[in-house]
Image 1 (tube, rainbow, N blue to C red):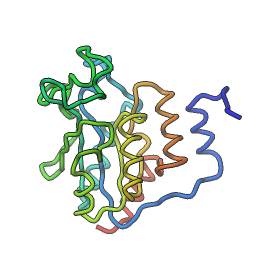
Image 2 (image 1 turned 180 degrees about the horizontal axis):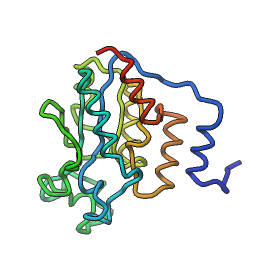
Image 3 (image 1 turned 30 degrees about the vertical axis):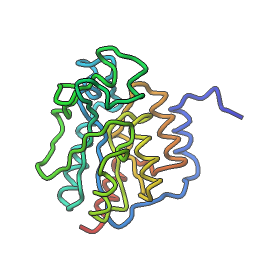
Image 4 (image 1 turned 60 degrees about the vertical axis):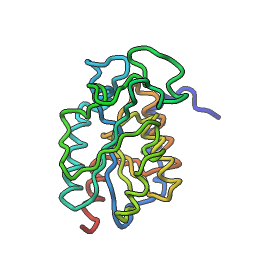
Length: 222
């Protein structure tokens, strides 16, 4: 029977408090993939129609993960979504609306396409432009991870119910162990955020507190 009287936050909390599900665990070599932490989504005040913020320290937490990964020699990857001036490379996905704040109007080189200025991005980090929800779809992310011998992907960014979830599902389908850092993902609304955390934790990924992710990364060989 569907527990209709519980909020998504309560369902996720109950899952966390119950018997612990077996984890996929950390493998031999990780990479950090930060999904679309760009101004269109991380600055609600500037772009209120599309902005989100679940944890106000999300960018700080993401920087902490990125610094640790660099120090240990693990790949750090950032993605952002942007389209050509005509918006045609957004395809059918952009056909549902055509307002100034709609998806296909995030232009390459625009302020909305820029990564959040609070992020610490190193010259050796890898930046990938994507056009669809999953960071794996029609990008070189999979081949890049294979080249680096990666078997574990730590995911941050947004939105939890959209691009994060799509990346996690496709990553698992490609044979990677998917780890979601809970404080480092965000969505526009609480319900889809916690519902997606629950869904990923039950099926597709290890959804872990930031402290557990840091501990897991620190335990892996350089």
